[in-house]
Image (cartoon, rainbow, N blue to C red; front, side, top):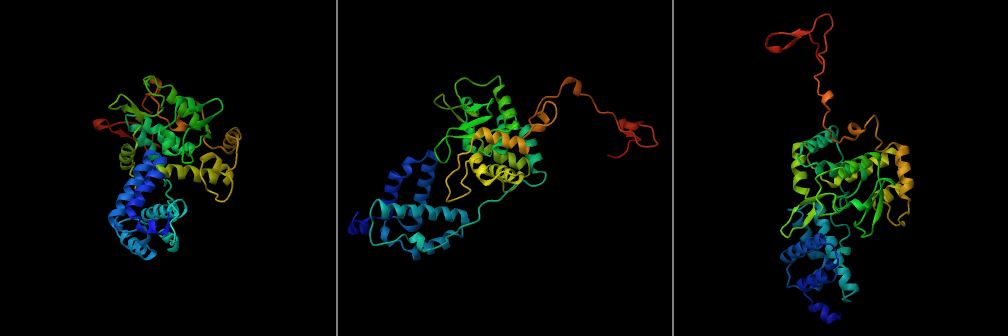
Length: 345
């Protein structure tokens, strides 16, 4: 693209070209996100102006106005998208006579990222709310997020053929790097998958482990957990919490129990260490490492109560516990069946 043509290229035409050449190769969710962002930028910056007229001063004014009705993290995403647009224009489209105006701004609206972890009592309330929900898939997905540090999209796209319980490995078919990766499973995670496989009323028209209802064209999509999870947080009285925070909680716990940064990168598929090549850690070795550190180890007989997976009480267990007698007084029942002589618990 010559300098004359670059001066005539409008901001709206540049965005449409970027969506066609770059965003069209991404996932449907990423395409929809880029389209929404491009539509918003056209309204706020003006689509008929030339791409060369967008200077650091214009972007600085846009940032100040945008921060009044959006968070710093949202504004940061806007500038990441704009920076990619200008890099594409200068590199592939050969737009001359202008540097990347986003890089000239320096730090835009960068934040330290989310650091929300489970507070005391929240884990118990969260799992209890999952057990009260009529669909057991909600509890399975939440518990796997805590046990495996997998992303929500990775859990919801799992199939039975991706799980090897003998080797205790789950192969994530698709993630942000678009490459399959093996995930070692703790004993608790294996127990959860065993309960999933034992489900008798599983439909045969989908290979997904976490499936939704039949759609308009007799097809099943992955389990739609977003709206249900928001309602779950209200029931559990948890504020400012997201599903992605389950992954952060799991990664933080692995770091606390002693896993190295390289082992966490291999296990969670994250890019915690930049500038280094992604380590090739054997998933079998990580399985032994997790057991040695006691991560997700089932304790006690049966193990179901240790895992936190709900189970129906046995008939012999449905017996009322004996009343605890107070010291020096005989237990009994007074008026209206109220126990007397029972010490306070």
